[in-house]
Image (cartoon, rainbow, N blue to C red):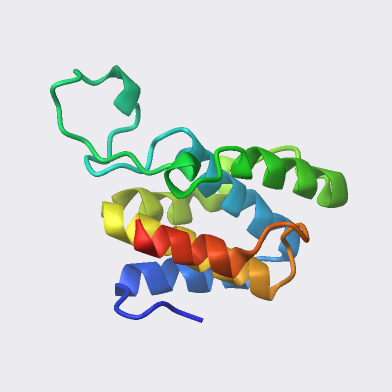
Amino acid sequence: MYLKNTSNDVKKIMEKIGELDKINKLKFITYILNLWNNNQINSLNETNPDLLDDSIDINIFNPSSIGYPDLVKMLKEYWNHFYQIYRFYLKEYKELITLFEKLSFKEKKDILSEIFLHLEHDELLPDNVDGYEIANLIIKF
């Protein structure tokens, strides 16, 4: 279920996510979605791009970029309702987090696309969210 022309690092992360049980998978995916929602997926890999000088040219990618500003909030509420995902335990995912944070801007977008394809395939999205559509919008950005 990989996109064309993805790096081996993207494939490695997606394989590791696929090995997790449902709850831990959703916890890790929530971590990545939180980064996306907080503008931390950007062309300079800045952890807080909102603090940068306005003269710095940076491409910020977030859910609003594809027309879904409340997507992450909606998904977290949905998952918390059905799966009681309350905490994210960083220690359990240290290797995955390190791998993800080292990825390029394009690779992070590829991971997001893969995540939505995976969530759609595993039927982990609310009925009103089409994972294929979200993945397609991410790819086009």
